[in-house]
Length: 343
Ligand code: MG
Image (cartoon, rainbow, N blue to C red; front, side, top):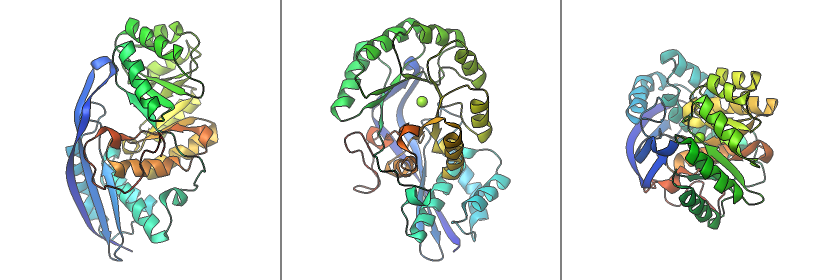
Protein backbone atom coordinates (compact mmCIF):
# COMPACT_ATOMS: atom_id res chain seq x y z
CA UNK A 1 0.00 0.00 0.00
CA UNK A 2 1.30 3.45 -0.94
CA UNK A 3 0.28 7.00 -0.16
CA UNK A 4 -0.73 8.73 -3.40
CA UNK A 5 -2.34 11.96 -2.22
CA UNK A 6 -2.37 14.21 0.86
CA UNK A 7 -5.12 16.84 1.06
CA UNK A 8 -5.32 19.63 3.64
CA UNK A 9 -8.16 21.93 4.73
CA UNK A 10 -8.18 24.85 7.17
CA UNK A 11 -11.19 25.05 9.47
CA UNK A 12 -12.05 27.85 11.90
CA UNK A 13 -13.58 26.58 15.15
CA UNK A 14 -15.38 29.38 17.04
CA UNK A 15 -15.80 28.55 20.74
CA UNK A 16 -19.34 28.59 22.11
CA UNK A 17 -18.15 31.16 24.63
CA UNK A 18 -14.81 32.88 25.35
CA UNK A 19 -12.51 30.83 27.55
CA UNK A 20 -9.88 32.01 30.03
CA UNK A 21 -6.88 30.13 31.36
CA UNK A 22 -4.62 31.12 34.22
CA UNK A 23 -6.69 33.83 35.81
CA UNK A 24 -7.32 35.65 32.55
CA UNK A 25 -3.74 35.48 31.26
CA UNK A 26 -4.85 33.53 28.22
CA UNK A 27 -8.19 34.24 26.52
CA UNK A 28 -9.45 32.23 23.56
CA UNK A 29 -12.43 32.77 21.24
CA UNK A 30 -11.63 30.76 18.11
CA UNK A 31 -9.33 27.88 17.19
CA UNK A 32 -7.56 27.29 13.85
CA UNK A 33 -7.79 23.62 12.93
CA UNK A 34 -6.10 21.71 10.12
CA UNK A 35 -7.93 18.70 8.70
CA UNK A 36 -5.92 16.28 6.61
CA UNK A 37 -6.82 13.30 4.43
CA UNK A 38 -4.32 10.74 3.15
CA UNK A 39 -5.35 8.63 0.15
CA UNK A 40 -3.69 5.41 -0.93
CA UNK A 41 -3.35 3.39 -4.13
CA UNK A 42 -5.58 0.70 -2.59
CA UNK A 43 -8.50 3.06 -2.11
CA UNK A 44 -8.21 3.26 1.68
CA UNK A 45 -8.16 6.81 3.07
CA UNK A 46 -7.34 8.11 6.53
CA UNK A 47 -8.19 11.36 8.32
CA UNK A 48 -6.18 13.40 10.79
CA UNK A 49 -6.52 16.72 12.59
CA UNK A 50 -4.09 19.15 14.17
CA UNK A 51 -5.45 22.01 16.24
CA UNK A 52 -3.35 24.04 18.68
CA UNK A 53 -5.24 25.80 21.49
CA UNK A 54 -4.82 29.24 19.93
CA UNK A 55 -1.39 30.64 19.12
CA UNK A 56 -0.29 31.72 22.63
CA UNK A 57 -0.76 28.52 24.63
CA UNK A 58 2.12 26.42 23.22
CA UNK A 59 4.90 26.87 20.66
CA UNK A 60 2.46 25.77 17.96
CA UNK A 61 0.08 27.51 15.55
CA UNK A 62 -2.29 26.50 12.78
CA UNK A 63 -0.38 28.08 9.90
CA UNK A 64 2.73 26.31 11.19
CA UNK A 65 1.02 22.93 10.86
CA UNK A 66 0.03 23.62 7.27
CA UNK A 67 3.49 24.95 6.35
CA UNK A 68 5.09 21.88 7.95
CA UNK A 69 2.80 19.47 6.12
CA UNK A 70 3.72 21.28 2.90
CA UNK A 71 7.39 20.50 3.65
CA UNK A 72 6.74 16.85 4.41
CA UNK A 73 3.98 15.77 2.02
CA UNK A 74 6.02 15.07 -1.10
CA UNK A 75 8.43 12.89 0.92
CA UNK A 76 5.57 10.67 2.05
CA UNK A 77 4.10 10.01 -1.38
CA UNK A 78 4.83 6.38 -2.30
CA UNK A 79 5.41 5.30 1.32
CA UNK A 80 3.36 2.68 3.17
CA UNK A 81 1.20 4.57 5.72
CA UNK A 82 0.80 1.47 7.89
CA UNK A 83 4.50 1.48 8.76
CA UNK A 84 4.11 4.15 11.40
CA UNK A 85 7.64 4.04 12.79
CA UNK A 86 9.08 4.38 9.28
CA UNK A 87 6.72 7.25 8.48
CA UNK A 88 7.80 9.05 11.66
CA UNK A 89 11.50 8.50 10.90
CA UNK A 90 11.02 10.05 7.46
CA UNK A 91 9.30 13.07 9.02
CA UNK A 92 11.96 13.44 11.75
CA UNK A 93 14.82 13.31 9.26
CA UNK A 94 13.18 15.84 6.95
CA UNK A 95 11.99 18.21 9.68
CA UNK A 96 13.66 17.77 13.08
CA UNK A 97 11.51 18.91 15.97
CA UNK A 98 8.13 20.52 15.22
CA UNK A 99 6.22 17.57 16.73
CA UNK A 100 2.85 19.35 16.48
CA UNK A 101 3.23 19.51 12.69
CA UNK A 102 3.48 15.73 12.40
CA UNK A 103 0.54 14.70 14.55
CA UNK A 104 -2.23 15.02 11.93
CA UNK A 105 -0.20 12.98 9.42
CA UNK A 106 0.51 10.31 12.03
CA UNK A 107 -3.19 10.23 13.00
CA UNK A 108 -4.32 9.76 9.39
CA UNK A 109 -1.80 6.93 8.93
CA UNK A 110 -3.15 5.18 12.04
CA UNK A 111 -6.66 5.58 10.60
CA UNK A 112 -5.51 3.83 7.42
CA UNK A 113 -3.75 1.10 9.42
CA UNK A 114 -6.94 0.43 11.37
CA UNK A 115 -9.15 0.39 8.29
CA UNK A 116 -6.82 -1.91 6.37
CA UNK A 117 -6.58 -4.30 9.35
CA UNK A 118 -10.34 -4.02 9.88
CA UNK A 119 -9.70 -3.15 13.53
CA UNK A 120 -10.90 -0.22 15.64
CA UNK A 121 -7.98 2.06 16.53
CA UNK A 122 -8.03 1.13 20.22
CA UNK A 123 -7.62 -2.56 19.40
CA UNK A 124 -4.87 -1.80 16.93
CA UNK A 125 -3.14 0.19 19.69
CA UNK A 126 -3.27 -2.81 21.97
CA UNK A 127 -6.42 -3.00 24.05
CA UNK A 128 -10.08 -2.12 24.46
CA UNK A 129 -10.60 -1.65 28.18
CA UNK A 130 -14.18 -2.32 29.28
CA UNK A 131 -14.98 0.85 31.23
CA UNK A 132 -16.11 4.04 29.47
CA UNK A 133 -13.48 6.80 29.57
CA UNK A 134 -14.50 9.74 31.79
CA UNK A 135 -14.35 13.17 30.19
CA UNK A 136 -12.87 15.90 32.37
CA UNK A 137 -14.86 19.10 32.45
CA UNK A 138 -12.97 22.28 31.68
CA UNK A 139 -13.95 24.98 34.13
CA UNK A 140 -12.84 28.46 33.01
CA UNK A 141 -11.27 30.75 35.60
CA UNK A 142 -13.80 32.93 37.40
CA UNK A 143 -14.89 33.93 40.87
CA UNK A 144 -15.03 31.06 43.37
CA UNK A 145 -18.84 30.94 43.19
CA UNK A 146 -18.88 31.17 39.38
CA UNK A 147 -16.51 28.22 39.22
CA UNK A 148 -18.56 26.17 41.67
CA UNK A 149 -21.71 26.93 39.65
CA UNK A 150 -19.89 25.79 36.51
CA UNK A 151 -18.81 22.54 38.20
CA UNK A 152 -22.46 21.97 39.14
CA UNK A 153 -23.56 22.46 35.51
CA UNK A 154 -21.06 19.80 34.47
CA UNK A 155 -22.24 17.47 37.27
CA UNK A 156 -25.77 17.81 35.91
CA UNK A 157 -24.45 16.48 32.57
CA UNK A 158 -22.87 13.43 34.24
CA UNK A 159 -19.27 14.61 34.66
CA UNK A 160 -17.32 13.36 37.68
CA UNK A 161 -13.84 14.60 36.71
CA UNK A 162 -13.32 18.37 36.80
CA UNK A 163 -10.39 20.44 35.60
CA UNK A 164 -10.67 23.82 37.28
CA UNK A 165 -8.46 26.57 35.87
CA UNK A 166 -6.66 28.65 38.49
CA UNK A 167 -3.52 30.76 38.58
CA UNK A 168 -2.19 34.33 38.65
CA UNK A 169 -3.82 35.54 41.90
CA UNK A 170 -2.60 33.55 44.88
CA UNK A 171 -5.10 34.79 47.49
CA UNK A 172 -8.03 34.32 45.14
CA UNK A 173 -6.75 30.91 44.04
CA UNK A 174 -6.68 29.72 47.65
CA UNK A 175 -10.27 30.95 48.00
CA UNK A 176 -11.31 29.26 44.76
CA UNK A 177 -9.71 25.93 45.60
CA UNK A 178 -10.96 25.84 49.18
CA UNK A 179 -14.56 26.48 48.07
CA UNK A 180 -14.38 23.86 45.30
CA UNK A 181 -12.64 21.33 47.59
CA UNK A 182 -15.21 21.87 50.36
CA UNK A 183 -17.93 21.03 47.86
CA UNK A 184 -16.17 18.03 46.31
CA UNK A 185 -18.39 14.94 46.21
CA UNK A 186 -17.51 11.31 46.83
CA UNK A 187 -16.24 9.67 43.65
CA UNK A 188 -15.22 12.94 42.03
CA UNK A 189 -11.71 13.78 40.85
CA UNK A 190 -10.71 17.45 40.96
CA UNK A 191 -7.83 19.02 39.10
CA UNK A 192 -6.61 22.51 39.86
CA UNK A 193 -4.81 23.48 36.69
CA UNK A 194 -2.63 26.58 36.86
CA UNK A 195 -1.42 26.25 33.27
CA UNK A 196 2.10 27.43 34.32
CA UNK A 197 0.85 30.62 35.98
CA UNK A 198 2.51 30.42 39.41
CA UNK A 199 6.06 31.15 40.41
CA UNK A 200 7.46 28.37 42.59
CA UNK A 201 6.98 30.38 45.80
CA UNK A 202 3.37 31.12 44.81
CA UNK A 203 2.65 27.48 44.05
CA UNK A 204 4.21 26.38 47.34
CA UNK A 205 2.07 28.93 49.20
CA UNK A 206 -1.13 27.76 47.51
CA UNK A 207 -0.48 24.03 47.83
CA UNK A 208 0.49 24.34 51.50
CA UNK A 209 -2.56 26.51 52.26
CA UNK A 210 -5.10 24.00 51.05
CA UNK A 211 -6.39 21.68 53.74
CA UNK A 212 -8.04 18.33 53.26
CA UNK A 213 -7.54 18.28 49.50
CA UNK A 214 -6.73 14.98 47.88
CA UNK A 215 -6.95 16.51 44.45
CA UNK A 216 -4.38 17.08 41.76
CA UNK A 217 -2.44 20.24 40.94
CA UNK A 218 -1.63 20.41 37.26
CA UNK A 219 1.31 22.30 35.74
CA UNK A 220 1.72 24.72 38.64
CA UNK A 221 4.76 26.47 37.10
CA UNK A 222 6.41 27.08 33.75
CA UNK A 223 9.35 24.68 33.78
CA UNK A 224 10.17 21.20 35.06
CA UNK A 225 12.89 22.72 37.28
CA UNK A 226 10.30 24.95 38.92
CA UNK A 227 7.83 22.12 39.36
CA UNK A 228 10.59 19.98 40.88
CA UNK A 229 11.17 22.76 43.41
CA UNK A 230 7.46 22.80 44.30
CA UNK A 231 7.48 18.99 44.52
CA UNK A 232 10.08 19.16 47.30
CA UNK A 233 7.90 21.43 49.45
CA UNK A 234 4.48 19.77 49.26
CA UNK A 235 2.89 16.36 49.53
CA UNK A 236 0.05 17.26 47.11
CA UNK A 237 -0.05 15.14 43.96
CA UNK A 238 1.26 17.09 40.97
CA UNK A 239 0.69 16.70 37.24
CA UNK A 240 2.75 17.91 34.29
CA UNK A 241 0.92 19.03 31.17
CA UNK A 242 2.55 21.77 29.09
CA UNK A 243 5.99 20.68 30.35
CA UNK A 244 5.79 17.32 28.57
CA UNK A 245 6.91 17.46 24.95
CA UNK A 246 9.40 14.64 24.45
CA UNK A 247 10.25 11.21 25.79
CA UNK A 248 13.27 12.84 27.41
CA UNK A 249 10.91 15.09 29.40
CA UNK A 250 8.92 12.06 30.52
CA UNK A 251 12.01 10.12 31.56
CA UNK A 252 13.17 13.09 33.60
CA UNK A 253 9.74 13.52 35.24
CA UNK A 254 9.87 9.88 36.34
CA UNK A 255 13.57 9.72 37.25
CA UNK A 256 13.49 12.87 39.36
CA UNK A 257 10.06 12.18 40.88
CA UNK A 258 8.73 15.54 39.62
CA UNK A 259 5.11 14.46 39.15
CA UNK A 260 2.76 11.55 39.68
CA UNK A 261 0.61 12.39 36.66
CA UNK A 262 1.23 13.52 33.11
CA UNK A 263 -1.18 14.91 30.56
CA UNK A 264 -0.31 13.37 27.20
CA UNK A 265 -1.65 15.72 24.56
CA UNK A 266 -1.39 13.94 21.24
CA UNK A 267 -0.75 16.99 19.09
CA UNK A 268 1.86 18.42 21.44
CA UNK A 269 3.92 15.21 21.68
CA UNK A 270 3.84 14.63 17.90
CA UNK A 271 1.10 12.07 17.30
CA UNK A 272 -0.25 8.72 18.40
CA UNK A 273 3.00 6.88 17.66
CA UNK A 274 4.93 8.96 20.18
CA UNK A 275 2.00 9.08 22.59
CA UNK A 276 1.90 5.29 22.57
CA UNK A 277 5.56 5.09 23.61
CA UNK A 278 4.84 7.53 26.44
CA UNK A 279 1.80 5.52 27.49
CA UNK A 280 3.90 2.36 27.74
CA UNK A 281 6.58 4.14 29.77
CA UNK A 282 3.92 5.48 32.15
CA UNK A 283 2.35 2.03 32.54
CA UNK A 284 5.79 0.53 33.24
CA UNK A 285 6.69 3.13 35.86
CA UNK A 286 3.36 3.78 37.58
CA UNK A 287 2.71 7.29 36.29
CA UNK A 288 -0.98 8.19 36.02
CA UNK A 289 -2.23 9.73 32.79
CA UNK A 290 -4.70 12.16 31.30
CA UNK A 291 -5.13 11.79 27.55
CA UNK A 292 -6.13 14.77 25.41
CA UNK A 293 -5.45 16.68 22.27
CA UNK A 294 -4.65 20.38 22.24
CA UNK A 295 -7.95 21.16 20.52
CA UNK A 296 -10.07 20.20 17.57
CA UNK A 297 -13.29 18.58 16.47
CA UNK A 298 -14.78 15.12 16.82
CA UNK A 299 -11.94 13.88 14.62
CA UNK A 300 -9.20 14.65 17.16
CA UNK A 301 -11.48 13.63 20.03
CA UNK A 302 -12.08 10.23 18.43
CA UNK A 303 -8.34 9.52 18.25
CA UNK A 304 -8.07 10.57 21.89
CA UNK A 305 -11.01 8.39 22.94
CA UNK A 306 -9.59 5.31 21.23
CA UNK A 307 -6.12 5.90 22.66
CA UNK A 308 -7.45 6.40 26.18
CA UNK A 309 -9.59 3.28 25.83
CA UNK A 310 -6.38 1.23 25.68
CA UNK A 311 -5.32 2.25 29.21
CA UNK A 312 -6.62 0.41 32.33
CA UNK A 313 -8.88 2.73 34.30
CA UNK A 314 -6.67 3.29 37.37
CA UNK A 315 -3.89 4.61 35.14
CA UNK A 316 -6.07 6.95 33.06
CA UNK A 317 -8.07 9.55 34.97
CA UNK A 318 -9.81 10.97 31.94
CA UNK A 319 -9.86 12.75 28.61
CA UNK A 320 -11.19 16.07 27.35
CA UNK A 321 -13.87 16.72 24.76
CA UNK A 322 -12.96 19.81 22.77
CA UNK A 323 -15.80 19.20 20.30
CA UNK A 324 -18.27 20.24 23.01
CA UNK A 325 -16.64 23.68 23.23
CA UNK A 326 -16.69 24.54 19.51
CA UNK A 327 -19.59 25.39 17.23
CA UNK A 328 -18.44 23.48 14.12
CA UNK A 329 -18.92 19.75 13.59
CA UNK A 330 -17.34 18.42 10.37
CA UNK A 331 -18.66 14.87 10.82
CA UNK A 332 -22.19 14.97 12.29
CA UNK A 333 -23.30 11.68 13.80
CA UNK A 334 -19.86 10.08 13.50
CA UNK A 335 -16.99 9.40 15.87
CA UNK A 336 -16.70 9.46 19.65
CA UNK A 337 -19.44 11.46 21.36
CA UNK A 338 -20.01 12.60 24.91
CA UNK A 339 -22.54 10.35 26.64
CA UNK A 340 -23.21 11.39 30.25
CA UNK A 341 -19.69 12.75 30.67
CA UNK A 342 -17.90 9.77 29.12
CA UNK A 343 -16.60 8.60 25.73
MG1 MG B 1 -3.72 21.27 31.70
